Image (cartoon, rainbow, N blue to C red; front, side, top):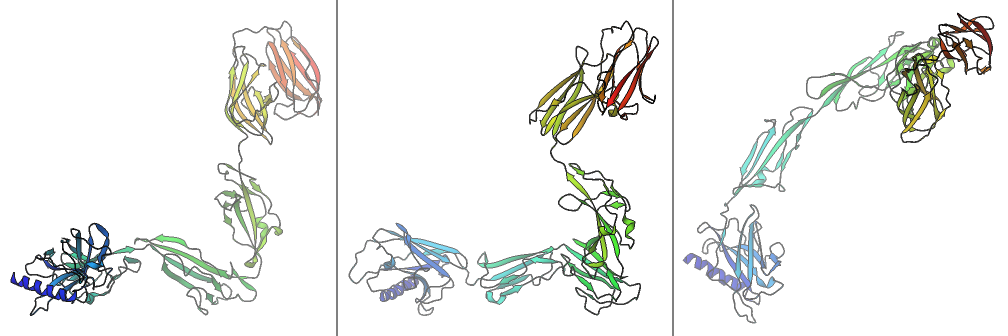
Amino acid sequence: MKKTLFITLIFALAVFGLFAARTRSYTQLLVNDVDGGLLPGVENTSATTDEDYAVSCYVTARPTEIISTATYSATYIRIWRFGNGTSMPYATTFFLQFGMFATDWTAGEVIHFDITHIPTGDTGSWELTIPDNNTSAIGYRQTVNPIPQVVAPPWAAAATYTVNMSTVPAGYITPTTLGPVEDVTTIYGTYTPTAVSATGYWTPASLTIDANTVWVADGYNFRFDQEFVWTELDYNNYHLTLNVVDTYFNGAYDINGYAVQAGTPTPIDALMVPALDPNPIDVDYTIAAAPDGYYWMPSVTQNPEFEMLQTKASKGVADYGDDLTWTLMQVNNYYRVIVQVWNGIDYNGVYDFTGPLNGSTPYVSTPITTYADYFGTYTMESPAPAGWHWEFTTYSGLDAVGDFAQDPNNPYLWTAYVTFNLIEEGPVPVELSSFTATLTGQFYVQLSWTTQTETQMVGYRVYRSTTADQSTIELIDNPLVPATNTSTTQNYTVVDKDVLIGQTYYYWLEAVDYNNSNFHGPVSVTVTGNVPPVLPEVTEMKNAYPNPFKANSSTNIEVSLKAGDTGTLSIYNVQGQLVKIVSLTEGTHMVNWNGRDTRGNACGSGIYFYKLSTQSMNQTKKMVIVK
């Protein structure tokens, strides 16, 4: 206790000598919770504040008006060592000059004090209530008695620094631990692990310990932990073989390119570089000039196109390679053909073709000197993809030497192109959702169809046949049904009354647009009924109508056969040749003839005879087909 009072007395006298002026000041003895201990590291004199500490204060009523070592010099606020360590024991002291507050303090106000040990971040704080004391012209110095004791953490007298390093995978850095040391500068430096392979990298690449290193508190000491992680890269091996084929002189020729110097003999085998891309061996390679009267195929300068050879078992490593071959040829013109498919944007697609050459597109033939071997017709065998159609499936345009063009890189190489064009299909003029044939209550056939959308449509026609063969169809006696050309659903109906009970009919619908037409069907229906037919009393054949009739149209011949009668209706040309024959049974029949023979061939214009032959009569009449 006497020791403490003595230190306080000496401290008070020193402060009074320094600040016997108008400026009020405040001093505070600082101790930690170790009996008799001092805040460590405070070794400066009263002229400066210790750089390891930051102190500040403010009046609680005005918390934004802060006085701190960051904004004021040690003349006004500081923490410093008091005493000489011999005749006067050391003491750690806080000092503040109250006059630095912009607003003068008054009795009863509370001042809040903070202290921070910068290396560790430990803090201490206390508060002081200003006592009620008068002031005089020469100033006033306030000393609090007894002096409050600030309890601060028991900081160590000397901190140590340790660096811990590790690698994934382990074992690639030595040493793994730096320190512990008190003088951190002794471990300043850059530390890098050794490489695992030639195809990877560490993250981070290295560790640098210097004055900017941010340490982590470890009790009253400091440490820094760093882990290095290895990443293995995917990479490829690129191989390039340079070959020269010389069957005339078996000579050596210089080649210029990557890692190939002028004067290097050929061939050069297995030029290889490991890399993530084919650079730098993916460059032009140029061979020396050919002897007089000769040239290089395919050209003097070539560039590799690397393709995968095989995949290795090791991580991410693949082999790519290419061969560049120069073939010495005598001066002569060589011809080749390239067969390709053009879709309006680029040349692509694999499609089979036949002709003078057989293969799949894109196709490049081997150059030959007999260009006529390429003449002829090329046929595209593959169907067009969905939504496209071939502009033409045969190509006969290659028939002269003038169809070959000179190669810009080789004056002796001439090329002709056979191109099949794909045409993208436009919008469908009509989208048909249904087409049906049903029997009505009157034993007629009703044809119905529904469209979802129509555009640029003219109309619809309905055709009929007694077989499913479309080549035998006939237009029913009904005009063209006009189209509505709307984007909404439309329903159409046509009734075929010219039908016989017991007969099966097949119907087709022709959708006619401004450019062409499309057929839908067939749909079929069998006409049934319970009403017995009324048989004619006599057998007779009426005149054909219309007569004459135009080619590509038709005429009708009504024939009646009495009960029990059967026969045929035969049509002959003027040479007496049978053109058409129809078998008949009892009843009334309307025979329609479309001007075609039994094979479906159109008969020419001229005079024709139609003859009815039955058990009861034979009758012949004449009709005419006009152009």
